[in-house]
Image 1 (tube, protein in one colour):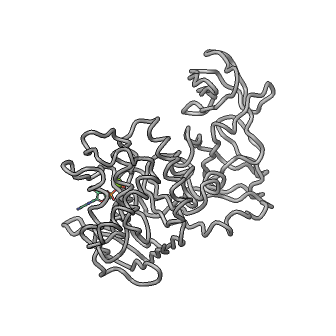
Image 2 (cartoon, helix red, strand yellow; image 1 turned 180 degrees about the vertical axis):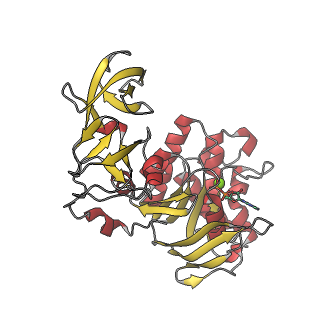
Image 3 (cartoon, rainbow, N blue to C red; image 1 turned 90 degrees about the vertical axis):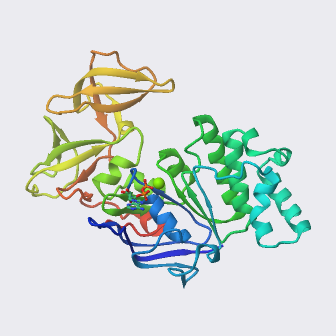
Length: 373
Ligand SMILES: Nc1ncnc2c1ncn2[C@@H]1O[C@H](COP(=O)(O)OP(=O)(O)O)[C@@H](O)[C@H]1O
Ligand SMILES: [Mg+2]
């Protein structure tokens, strides 16, 4: 397996309004690491993956695999396997032939091909499907074949571009677990593009959040959840989305949103201008004496939990609150409190502000640099 390093990588497409889609991408994917690239549609996730694969020219900087620069190495010589959202299988070939295809091209002896294909089919629990053709398979089975075809080539790293997006929710959950299991079993370096929160949070050793300005933050999933570096990451990681509210810092270092003052250990002298206050819906708890009073606009019951939309005086948009157990009735007056230590405050530039005397963040060092573009 292999490590993959980006140094000052940028991408621009030639054209009259040519601009950098990606700029100053700098990070290393460790040997055996599972790195997930997330970000809104069009932010350059596929482009970055295709640059690793060699399918897209690198406009600036360099990409190296195991320390060797690959900018000018053709795709076939990079030793990588890519799995796409569209399975890209040969419809007229059997599952066996589809999986064997790359090995056949590489003139691997027949007996060896047979052995390899069966080993992979066993790993993916599809030995019984080897004689079928893709049109006779379900979407999940087809994606399994595409993954099998990637594995059988024993690549130095796997590149996945939204491989599960075409599957329905239940199948996606199954395949997600399968991919996690494969990662463990193969110890393989995997780079995985998705816009699915759950896939990113559960599969990744580290998540790279891409935004309009390139790389927004890199870190372990829970690090991004607990300490988003900026408003963009705060709004992107977590579901339902974090409440992001216009606020101010008080002279005493508290924060004020609407007419409500909340405890925070901000700088003693109030910063000029406003801040953005972030509170995750799951970090607002029902509390008869809660600091935030409001009126329940709407309740969405999901079974185990409910989403409560709470109108708060002075706030333009209702607060989203996740409630376990019995939710309040629509129309009711209701109070909530933020969980201590769970307020996020961002300055006017949208960057995370550290509270005074914050404990040293012990997760950052262990999980790699936090980078803000
Ligand atoms: N061949 C191309 N020529 C010009 N622009 C392109 C080309 N391919 C992609 N783009 C642009 O690059 C940006 C990133 O695309 P992409 O990497 O596919 O985004 P993502 O995978 O994150 O949705 C988009 O704005 C897209 O329009
Ligand atoms: Mg894409």
